[in-house]
Image (cartoon, rainbow, N blue to C red; front, side, top):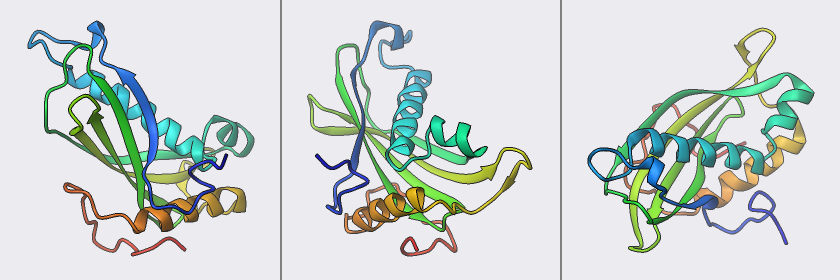
Length: 169
């Protein structure tokens, strides 16, 4: 079966599935913002693994991605026991920067609970400076995802960043 990075179909990648656990609930009896951050972090790591920018790549190359910006909007409460899923997509990349977008869904209600709009930058960990992604085994799946995700309707809340390319490549 093809991974999302190998397919060309226009579907967001499912990057996290779980259930809201008691430890994530705060004094207001809903999911705490730090738990949302943890879910979005896990989804982002899973998403980057899809196109090869995970821990093995970092260890092998000394290259990684840093988050430049993450804007989170909390739209609906999540409570203990809610089944959740994160759907992720590439908005664009110029191979130095990657604009990615993650939607957290309440599966029981079929409604989006929150989203994270993220801009990451590819860096050389030795020089601590930005560098372009040059490895074809990373670029190709990244382009495939970006092209497939470009066919999807733009989700509400996605930031349009000035100067962002329309497509990867």
